[in-house]
Image 1 (cartoon, rainbow, N blue to C red):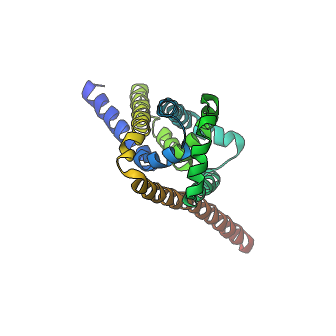
Image 2 (tube, one colour):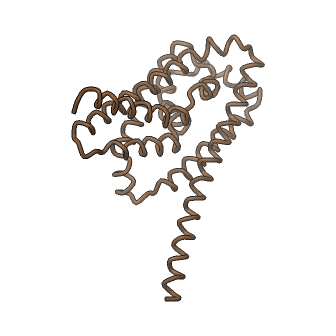
Image 3 (cartoon, helix red, strand yellow):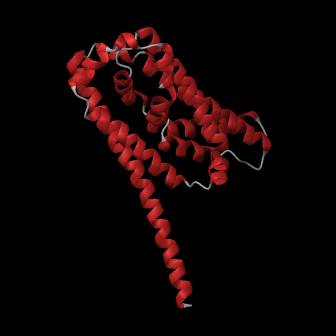
Length: 237
């Protein structure tokens, strides 16, 4: 196999992974929510947390891509159930953000001195990495990417895997960049502008959670109807 073919396979796999995962994660829309959830945290600790989230999301997506189907089959969990459960988590988190009051903000400022790096780290996985950044949608998308990596040629499979891993690293870097520079960028919008953007982002996140859960419910319902149709057909036969 010549170099041009391998490069074409690498490029297709890289672009497919980026195009599949990045729009679902949507780091720019998550940035104001990240700022809200880390209200009262110093800029230094927030930047450290952003770096940790970038690492977390890379390894979480990598694990989903390489072992997602195996884990789901082992526990007997289907992707529709993952979508339903994860969608409900996203809805709950987004609902709290949408209904946050100014008193919540003031309270966050009052307890700012009580923040420690250990306390911040406790939120690094839940809810910041999962389900805020790496939710059921992105996990399902990454599992789908993993299913496309197998090929009859070992060299082609390795090429596609390398491209997919590189793409996941690029996604993690984009997330890190958006979160790391969220504060200085959003500060220019002012308090009112940031509040409006946060509410809008929270509402979009709420809609995304509803869509994820709805997709799961729809797929489960469709499977139930198909199963019922099969049993009805067997009964009449």
